Amino acid sequence: MVAKTIAGKTVEVNEEGFMTNPNEWTEDIAVEIAKEEGIPELTADHWKIIHFCRQSAGTSGKAPTLRQITTGTGISTKELFTLFPKGPAKKVARIAGLGKPEGCV
Amino acid sequence: MKKLVILGAGTAGTIVANRFKRVMDLDEWQITLVDPDPIHYYQPGFLFIPFGMYTKKEVIKPKRDYISAPLTLIQSAVEEVDPAQRLVRLANKQTLSYDYLIIATGTDIHPEETPGMAEQEWGKSIHSFYTLETSLKLNQMLHNWEGGRLVVNVVENPIKCPVAPLEFIMLADWHFHKHGKRDRVEIIYATPLSGAFTKPVASRMLGELLERKNILVEPDFMIERVEPDARKIVSYDEREIEYDLLVTIPLNKGAEFIARSGLGNELNYVPVDQYTLRSKAYDNIFVLGDASDAPASKAGATAHFSIDLFTENFLRYVEGHELKPYFDGHANCFIETGFGKGLMIDFNYEQEPLPGRYPLPGIGPLTLLEESEFNHWGKLMFRWMYWHLLLKGMEVPLPSEMSMSGKRLV
Ligand SMILES: Cc1cc2nc3c(=O)[nH]c(=O)nc-3n(C[C@H](O)[C@H](O)[C@H](O)COP(=O)(O)OP(=O)(O)OC[C@H]3O[C@@H](n4cnc5c(N)ncnc54)[C@H](O)[C@@H]3O)c2cc1C
Image: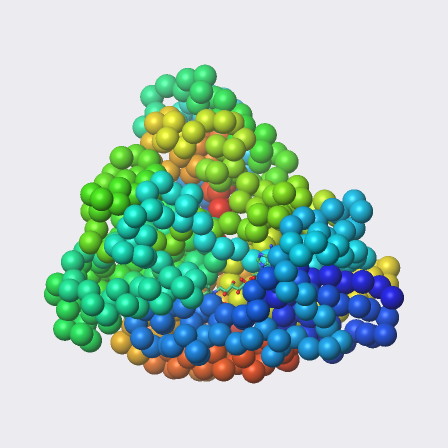
């Protein structure tokens, strides 16, 4: 684990760049990580998904899988791939300050 | 008389029933199992059938050989569970009442969930090996195949036996070598994961192994559809891979009655406490094997380790004691790597697979994350253990909790 400064705030991240403490997350951090992930601007649809993921993780303790996101938000898998290209579940988890989704063991 | 009903008499249901038969007072407990299929399948054997290494006969036995009085087996499918009334409704119109319920209905493949997959080319240029029927079909196909591009694709995780696709690929590589066709076959592994396997160290080591075998990995590939006539698979981000032969691991889902009964998540797996395997919603329902949402590998070995300590925990629980958080997610898998060799991985909820020796630290004889001939024999020997020890609920000389000794941190 290493400390990293994102959007002026120092937070802990793991070796894959996922934040380890979701409570350290802010919306400004999300904007910065999104840029690192190649998403220059977060639209209302992006935020809807980010907020859903944080809410879902708040109750379950872990980042939701792709299927949980599509079932929970009504946004299609296809659209998710447009909003968060390549591996949306992983990307949105990182942007939302959550751990990597465990969907696969 | 207390009533325990077990739904599903596959690996987990059969093992737990036979454990209970040994330790429970059966004058006080009535144990009933429900399963529509009279055959028990040794599913790990499905991997070997396409290559003619196992026959159909070696992987099936009648369920009745393993479930005998005073256990009762009803041959019918579960239609619905009514947890509030503690009732189970069956397809044969029977209704069973229970004091405690164990759900062990596993997970199954659903090719119809991917557009284009289970249509005109299913069983022709599109195959699987996750059921007896599909693995037998694939055997015929490979027998006559002249070569071309073989694409192996996992539709979505989790799947049961997450290493089986990799093993299939490595066995295929060996098979084509043996038959002098390897130079006419291109092998591609299209996976929704970012690498060969889920956990970092194993993923790296397995990835290198695939590279040495000249197998191409297409990572982060989430399939949207198959175009059966054009013979290509297309991902959500519009990558296309053409194939001559597609071997798919279709979407895995739990049984439909779980959804119908309001007991499941989006893939019909029952949410449980991962350390006790008790349903989160009902304190008299437990879920063993692949049917739960516990973040452990969906594997027979996992089911076996979880049941080892389950029976005693359950018996204490029904006498009014607290459940112990006993299950650590322990899994281990033999991984066939072809050419008469195999490797092994051993891991749990917390600890990813590491290289080393198993089960005796420093000695083995099994090697973790390293190829050896002994591991291959271990896997083949396992079939004997499965039919003769495991299913009958006998002790298998392997520790159920994972141990760190013998493993190397890398
Ligand atoms: C190709 C392949 C290779 C594998 N290799 C390995 C390996 O090397 N090592 C390993 O540990 N594991 C391996 N596995 C996984 C292993 O077989 C499973 O994890 C294990 O069988 C799970 O046990 P279970 O009891 O949960 O489910 P199952 O054994 O699948 O049993 C489920 C039972 O429920 C019944 N059922 C379904 N629906 C209903 C219903 N509505 N009503 C009543 N009954 C129902 C079914 O008929 C079945 O008998 C492999 C699996 C496959 C497919």
